[in-house]
Length: 137
Image (tube, rainbow, N blue to C red; front, side, top):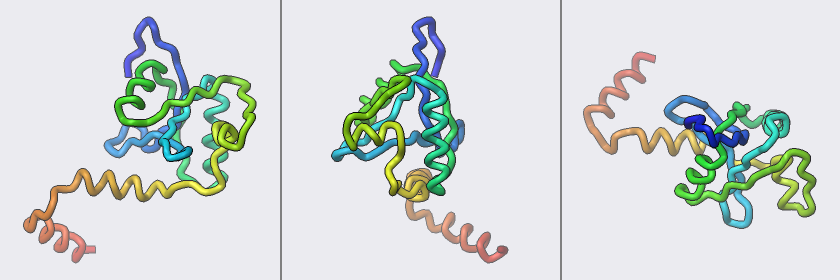
């Protein structure tokens, strides 16, 4: 994402940043997929550390343009939720904006879905090649 003169940075948590299977951290809240946009990078780093403490893969904290992220979320059917510096939650749902839930979705599911989408469907020659490669291991 570009840094134009109207660049308003927010900090998001990315998995495999810059790679083909890059993913953004999100929460499921009331049937909505919510992407957290942290105003303060320290808050985003703390959230990433809490994920790591739960044996979740450690995301990188990336500063991106708020307008571009909000557009991305809207187009993807996600809800962008801005978390201002010094945010104090007033409900159980809002607590999830500063600390991840005790149970998180498995990232391997996301990676498996990305792999499946990237793989050609039912190509017998590729399947035969894959079996031969596996036989070498």
